[in-house]
Image (tube, rainbow, N blue to C red; front, side, top):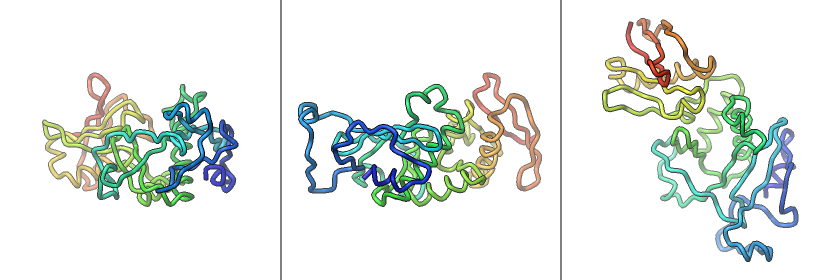
Length: 247
């Protein structure tokens, strides 16, 4: 129950509950029928949601039972998940910044609060099996998400494998998916530096962490790779990419 979750948290409370007299669950248990209000019987597509307050920030949780579940966004990358959402027969709920945070929904403080609340939900509800991070088109297993997200929230590295993804481009570069959601730019590890995909991905994850810290790149910088080689990191002409290549 969502109300039980809120009551169990020291940093989270239920700040808006439009249906205080009805049971709100993540999903309906198999074979269970929940009593619906007259209004909801008249509108089978009625959405059930609550507003949660965490550390002064409000977040909406939508798609709760007994209402309609949220649709599951398309994903291309999986982390600690073996099967697709369809194969796992999953239903989705949607956690998002509250309406009054819309202007700063992409700001790091709001996103950190959102991810912290997602970690709280995972710890409380065993039925939550995965997280979809739509900007990176990623499906992330609960244990992996909770581990890397908690480490970042406590001062560790940004979860580049999960909150961003990496894909190979037609010209052989290794490019992030979803980094622009955080900093307005995607990262490109240019060929031939990208030829060893495992090493290039490790390098990319290190650079993603740094870019999230500084908020993007406006001018060229020289950096040293883990193997000691000298690299140059520069913004593309249109400013949409951060390109990394050997000096």
